[in-house]
Image (cartoon, rainbow, N blue to C red; front, side, top):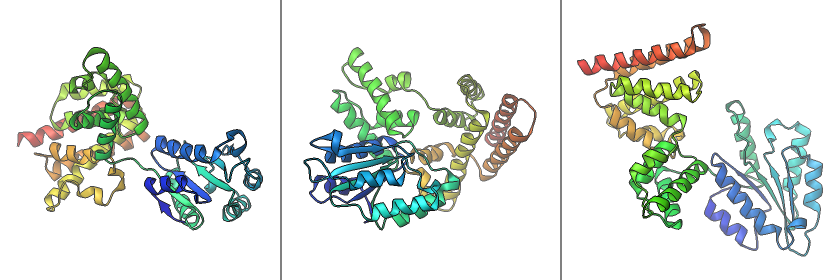
Length: 352
């Protein structure tokens, strides 16, 4: 047993000799659902009411054991699926029971643990990794992380073609830049764009349509705010901040995302000064996977900004973060003061 990819997973479940235990998890919840449903559909036949038993996160080991041991109805195999079971939170005795079940699944059952909604908090990440390393010895692990920028662009272009529309890679990148890299969100945006283009035009999705129709997520709006700050666009910057407050975004979240944008700028500046390409930070931070555009945008925006200027901006962001968590001053006032400071810092740089 080991970690597998989607291609290997498909071959296994289409074969006559699938693994007895699968664990499907990851950031990309839409793909988690899709692949789990593919496995369940495959081994629930020909009588799903008998050959597919689903359990929620509250299932006990005894309940799952009874289902695993039961024989399939007029089929070689059946499927037992458990959703969002948090192994890291189980009592030791219950966890031991589940492990024993996984080690002794009969040939007539495929046991699936899948995670359509559960996210593991940072404080549990260590326990989760330990669990995965142990489970890899007795199960097939399929992790479905966010796709790369290129993969997402290809996905959107292919999805548009299937719907009778035309979407170029450049416009696909624009959709991703505005909506983010979550596949479910991107699929919803694609449906909307295709419906509009077929209704009002010849099916070609243009940059103007994307600009008009695509919903910007909070992160995207904050990054646009960062761009406006770097460019010294006072009116645009405060307009974007007004929009964020109108959408009831938390001030601490705004400052946090804004700080991550300036961290991108600082990392790219350091990489370029060290003779490395702008993509270099992705080599040591997996958080850029599927979001490489952040580094490309940072390379564009960092021109003309010195390391000292970026450090001053980061210090201002740190001070604002501390103030938001400790000061009695109105949060909006604190964020507006931060924005003014950042604009003045970058203005001094451009004036040199």
